[in-house]
Length: 400
Ligand code: ADE
Image 1: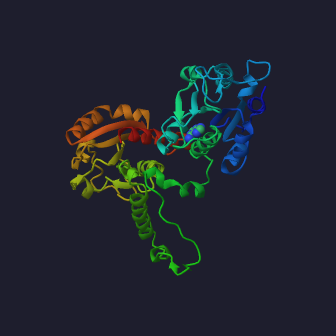
Image 2: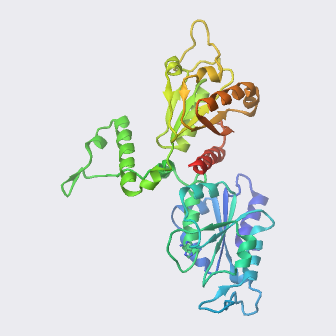
């Protein structure tokens, strides 16, 4: 039994208050120490220690079918270099899988380059098997049989897949609840919007005749946020204009009571650093014609019977008047603009069936395209909240 498996067994047996990790990585490699060196330090090392993730290394050589523990052989057809044999790789994969349908990722330069969308897609899994090649490659038959994803970390050739595996583990781990502290997570958010980070400054105010932009010293948070968004866009335009073609602005439209507002605020923050909230309790907004663009994503937060007035919008003397979705959002226009419907519970989804059917037809006529419907509630666990946000982002990535 491997050290890692023993660890899990102990947890199961004595596990009061101890839980299984939220993500298990199994790395198949001929150089386990390379993976260990990287995953025992820094934020990933801390996450392993805190049992939020686990990184099991499996030495492919241990699964050699050969008494000399050899795992490679000459290539059929001749040529330079050696090829890793199919059988040891197959056995190592089976040992990691243990009859589960875990995805098997092969790190190779012959693949699409890893990006944030792929990272987020993989973060939805509970376990991942990462296969690192060496020499000239691995016998293609075992790859055809077992590999579900081919991933490159860049258009250059490394000596093996281990550095790529470490990159993948690091990027995926950031999405596991608790891995990043609040401070750490806010540092990285802007790529969520397909924007590069704005420039950062710290003391002193004047360095080599260069001043810190005045607005950052103003203490005016609204102005600072606007400056940051503007400079994120400028920087993206200068350095990675290709990202701008994939970016969507998140627009969250809500009506209902404070619980609905809280849902909207929470999910919006998980989706975007620069998301916009529209409070459709406000009559003025309901009456205003609003046109949305193709590159905006509308998220509607629904509440079937909203008779609990919002803090911001106290009930009128005559009491609240229930409006259907269609009536409330009668002044919206889109240009193939995608939208998402969010219910706060399964029961609510059922209760609103007829109303949402009418709303969907109305939206279709007005130039909107439905992306998905989900259930989201502020009481959901952090893990569940992240999962829903990642699902929406994966669907957006698919249409962009
Ligand atoms: N193995 C060798 N080169 C690689 C690369 N660029 N990405 C992932 N794995 C690799």
